[in-house]
Length: 90
Image (tube, rainbow, N blue to C red; front, side, top):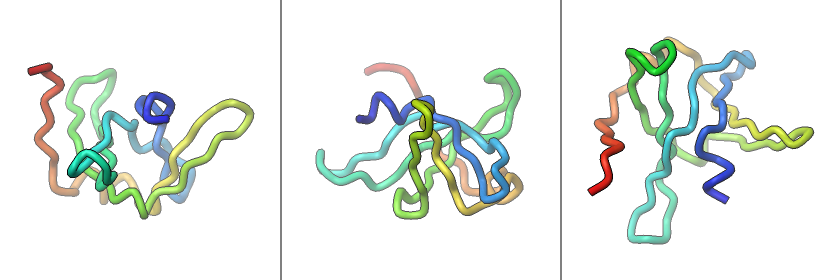
């Protein structure tokens, strides 16, 4: 369920916390094409958003705690093209 995925911590291949799932990108109302991840920042200040290809992510649920693993590092995510994202409801 998407409600379980949004807010989930994203870890890199060194098991370091690199961000959090903010949203999902769905095209044509049926195909998941991206996972929006907040990266950088501290306590919500200075963070930016990047979109990761869902096929590059591993999803797990251990002891009732969900996690997402990405084969990347913090610097790669910080330097990735930014996704302009507005949480304003229209």
